[in-house]
Length: 588
Ligand code: ADP
Ligand code: MG
Image 1 (tube, rainbow, N blue to C red):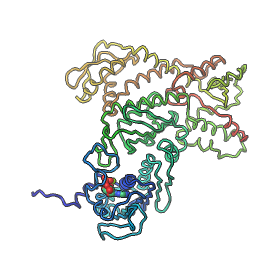
Image 2 (tube, helix red, strand yellow; image 1 turned 90 degrees about the horizontal axis):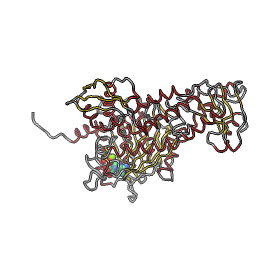
Image 3 (spheres, protein in one colour; image 1 turned 180 degrees about the vertical axis):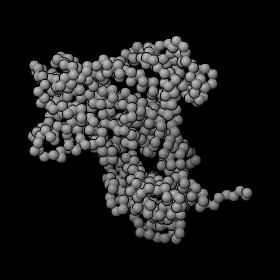
Image 4 (cartoon, helix red, strand yellow; image 1 turned 30 degrees about the vertical axis):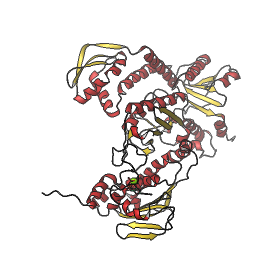
């Protein structure tokens, strides 16, 4: 068979296969181009979920008349001025998006530079024509995949495709609060974001509230840290506000939305002490890194990046998040208190108007469980109220002064601004957990030698990964040595673990290393053991406490990091502000 160089049309269609998967991918490329063009407002129009029409209009720098056709040529770009692939500060640089999209749709490019006195419009069929358009660019993509029915078949319903496209715009909008965004879906305005005048951090917060939700904005901790030349800024949720999946985690590298296993692993590491496994924080985090320490050219759609020093990035994130969580340690999310409020209100106050903010919050997913803990009626006859502490005591402490115990389970305290209800068992469990952890850190992990050292065999890469981290594992009490290719011999295990299946433990560790670059499994298991021991050593629900004991518990909680959540991520206390209580009684 003769070898031939493929004609350009085919080459573009092949490239489209990589870059253009669905309407959302077209939207991504076009909106990125608009941002690269310095636009301050970007309008996206969809018809039929983007299958019939995708139009993106901006007020950016525009394209000069004699460059319109060139923009549709393969590998034609204005963004790579030198030949330095390591200094890319724009979304684009490959010059592939427009020709690829044009190869699989009916495509029209209309543009006007600020200085030109008229706009020009270019289409593959029909060529160049004068047009009416303000300064900026409008790209129209009609009948996507009309010539490739196989692709068309894979698209989902217009509603689903529109949702993906909207999601793409929302992610980009998060990193560009100074740009106004609008999305019209079949004529309906589904996203309308005004440009914020403040900087990324300040303006970012308003926009976050709009895009991720007010609940997040109210229960988020700000994070800011620098290591070497890498900056981290953004917001993370208090552990009590968490989700069952990672969909509400928004990560950006140099303002580019990314999916990245290094970053995902770092998040997991940062929260592992304060969240049950299987629960995930909500985050919006922005890494700014010099262009030479991150490679964005590893994936055609550039959704993945590669850091030159993964350990550095990981350390930066884990360190910054842990510090922020610790500083916010005693806080538990306001939504929990709101959920509790909601649970008091209906039923117990018959005849009152319903539909309070508390009531609706209560029904939000994930909160019902938290609310259920606090169903104990406040005016229970079992309440024991003892001698009242002085007002100074009340003012002095964040968790206030204990006033009594309800149902042998909840400690009620009065604070300067309201009341605090503590779940004594959950609180104490966290305190014991932290004590054990602190002693682990101080005295190291007791090891226990195996009578018969165990030989473990896995595939060679897995063994190599484990051997590489041998010193760290030894610190945690797990001691092993290489034992020929594909095998190692285990000599000691952490005493805390008791009888342990070392093969299963190492298998988990090897898998975690492969997935996240850091093994959390061993630490997890140690912490799980701590948690179990803590649970046994704790004040059980149902034990009577006197005022002194209650106050001691409150004071220790104030002095202990992470005391706002028990070892399983549930809140240890809730606070009701006087204002909330007044609202309950219709005083406000
Ligand atoms: P890339 O973004 O990688 O350069 P594209 O195929 O997406 O490649 O775009 C090709 C070129 O067309 C860009 O480099 C830019 O010069 C021009 N262009 C595309 N969209 C716009 C726009 N909205 N405003 C101004 N110029 C644009
Ligand atoms: Mg581009």
